[in-house]
Figure 1 (tube, rainbow, N blue to C red):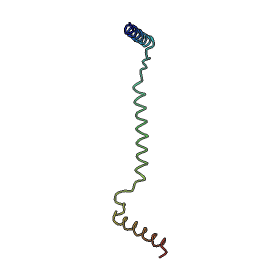
Figure 2: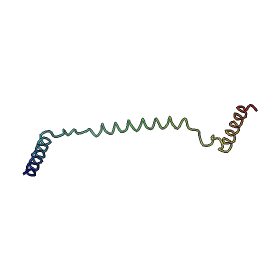
Figure 3: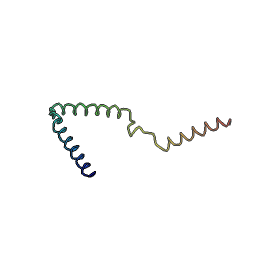
Figure 4: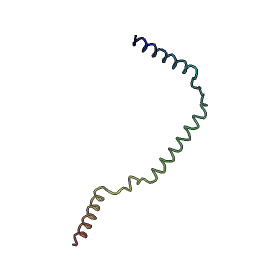
Amino acid sequence: MDRRFAWLGAAVGVFAVWRWRRRNPKPHVEEDPAESLRAKLEESRSVADERERFEERETPVDEVVDPDERRRSVHEDARARMDQLRGE
């Protein structure tokens, strides 16, 4: 008897949800294709501007310091500071 009531309650619940969804459908809003393309174009332009600003701050390859020279100078600076801290 309890199982029958459980099935009956489940069936009534499913039926109620089905009617509620059928009565309140989501409104279908058609988006203007031209507007969506304009929005995408504007977004791509802003991304391109950001990329240009980013690339302006980068060091060109021919101006990059040799990694070995950079490493030597960093080590020399560190040794000088260590000597200074030791009081030498």
